[in-house]
Length: 86
Image (cartoon, rainbow, N blue to C red):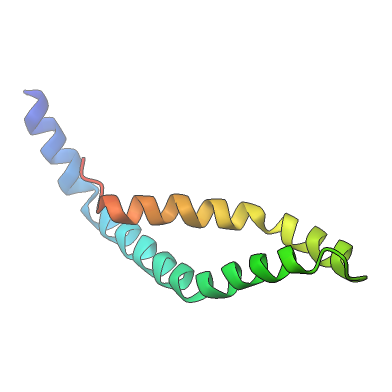
């Protein structure tokens, strides 16, 4: 069996999984879009609050969530690429 035929069989057999992953990415993208303005506002406010007493605690909390911003950026890039086809 040639490679193209094998890929089509895999694509067809994994169709439901691919559709579910696509829907999951779309839902994640929508959640990110809703939260993004709050995240950017938090980063702006933290940059202005460096001399205030609660800054250390707030910055530490935001630092723990920095991975979320990086993940959101990666997800946005994936969403812009469109669905992945096998």
